[in-house]
Image 1: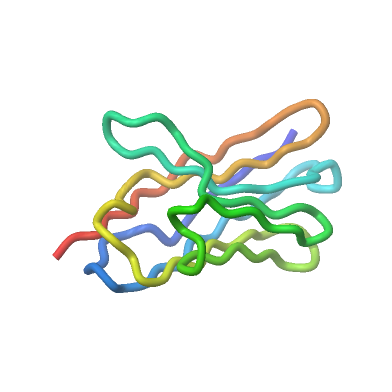
Image 2: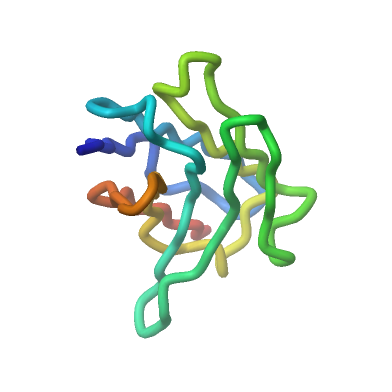
Length: 115
């Protein structure tokens, strides 16, 4: 079992920045990939980006060059640095941890980009 707790959401003006954190606990040794997803009202949940245990990152085209995923060496916390935020980035952001064979989700944190 893996438990995930996200933090760092809030309201920011367009062009601003936020950093989300995802704290993992439990069987963290079994995690091979962690990722961030988001879901806006009326839309499906979509991948924002992910990072593997060896540090390989993948990003959605919509956030490339603006968002950065990183992690600590102990694999206990994953971060999502979000810069140059746009109103269309408004969503609930979820952390995901993948193991074999399970996936675990956090409870989500709201990000609102509005003037």
